[in-house]
Image (cartoon, rainbow, N blue to C red; front, side, top):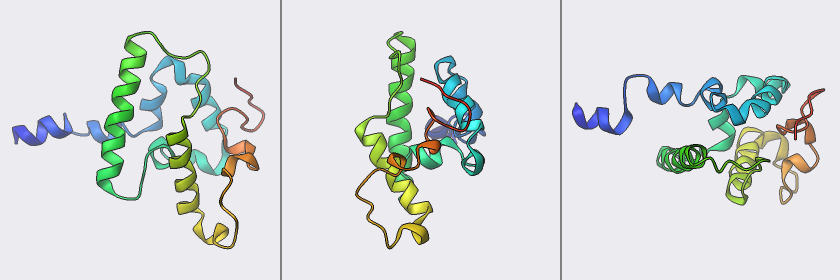
Length: 133
């Protein structure tokens, strides 16, 4: 039982840490969260459904740990960049998740470009009437 607690933390912590409200609890993410809340159909998704690998559980939780620890480090050392931008790895993960969710729509398309090159309103910076940096 102790090992389970050490691996997964207090009860319901894992589920809570995957909620959009948890992601927005870091004050530097407020503009991204506000844009997400104006994002139509994608508003019903959790951040981790787009921003973490969802091909298998091991990959999902390994990257959840890596990204989470990186975020904690950056936030607590006060080295948060002025403009938050997605990394190359993050972009590849988001693109793979777009294709995974919309497979039926994109199965006959060239998927070599990033989806948000054409679908600009799905990003956190150009959603609806809300424009963030």
